[in-house]
Length: 634
Ligand SMILES: [Zn+2]
Image (cartoon, rainbow, N blue to C red; front, top):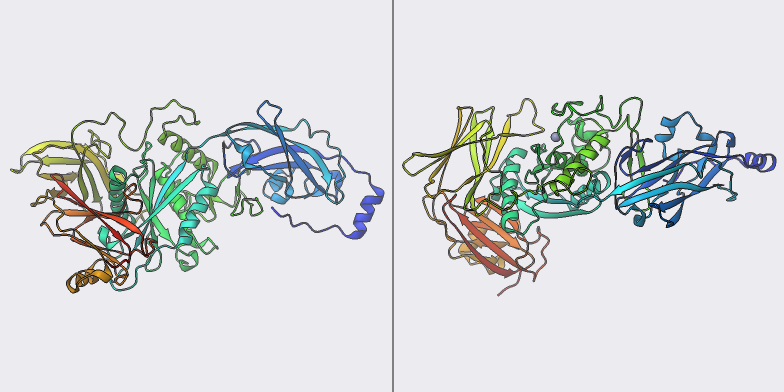
């Protein structure tokens, strides 16, 4: 908010001082803005978020004068007030009445005040201009309208926004060093969510996994990654201590290929829906105008903002080449506003003092759910995400109590008995389906299968006789090219029955998949957790063939006795003595995994716990846990 105003020439200044007495200023409008706003003040404000008050002046008669001012803030109907100095001066002559759009689009044409955080607490606050003065000598200027132009707004407390970003390390050829997103990518996601999302408390955690250990190979797709991430989230929420309202985002570096991101769009609040997307530098992708428009060195933040918004129920408006899935989207061209320009965005930027704030004109910037250039969040998307956040937290759409809590787990009391959680993918173009993850659970993690949907899920006994048939939905993926395979996901839970031996999935009577419980009972025997320096020759050869292509010299080998066909393994690591567990692999088919402590940010001497679970589908599970000091020789 540093104005770039040319100083009046000394001659002009003399003329002003000598020949003109101060003329009256007028305050026309006060606007309170966080992310996007109109002069009608119809975009909600959330408490605890960076807030700038813009005062639009009318000073047509004061050509050549620069003026500044002071804002009075009043709490509700109380006598508690504070004053804030403007962070800029304006050229009084440039702010003439009748060119509102011109003023709205230019931070230099309003007096701007950064509101102290204490004054954005939940509740009502009023603003008025208490003083207008000439910048050069602080001489007060009369302003007859200033006392009566008062803006009263209400800050509502938003729920905390909880996101876990899972870095997915990969190579394509099996030889090259793994590519991981960087800490700058994580910082960019945090920054963009902080600046643009309707939230003030951001709880962003992160984890690191290896693609191959999670059955992702070659040029894997976001659909494949979302299935794997869905399984990781299932494990972490059901037994890893993660808050069930955490939204998961899988992040893939653009070093070897650009993995286009996607998610599915839940109609009702559902934090179990995961998303994934790419991280990197827009300059590396001239072939993608939907990324290349960004002239900064990193696109990771807004890209995550788009994909995560899908998990909050936001669909594509269909304005710039993206699919048309939201017929309620109000802006014809996909911008932040229709013509005439009513809404204007404001990006407060990196610095807390407001000095990096920039205006994003509403007819040049577009909504983040489009594939247009210059992406920001429109009023429509801001409100949509805020309402969904409230609903996920069991609050009514305006933030008050009232709704039945819609947490991501099924509402309590949980149905009793045992359940089978199922993740499967359906390729509607190829006519194939695959079970991705199947696990028995004491309470259902997903919505219980009901009688709606395109897919039929059958449970069969050992003799192949039908036990039960359920209908379930195929969740269509977003962001798929029209020429790419149309892929969807099945995520459901069904009651467990100890006669179940096989699951059958059928979509449109054509696409079929089968899942059979492992022929061997699950077990984790002879669990070995060792630093590479302590490995025997035979163990070291296992380490070199372990899925992680690097970190052999510094890695930790986790190995156990193979059980047999049809059993898969989950490997988790805890860095805090077992309070929170990070899943390193879910649905692993090998009986070993290499963990790279460096990649996880673990220093030598750090004590960690490693837990291995074996799972034969839905009959049995077995667990063993070992602790280890990173890098320490015994
Ligand atoms: Zn999308």
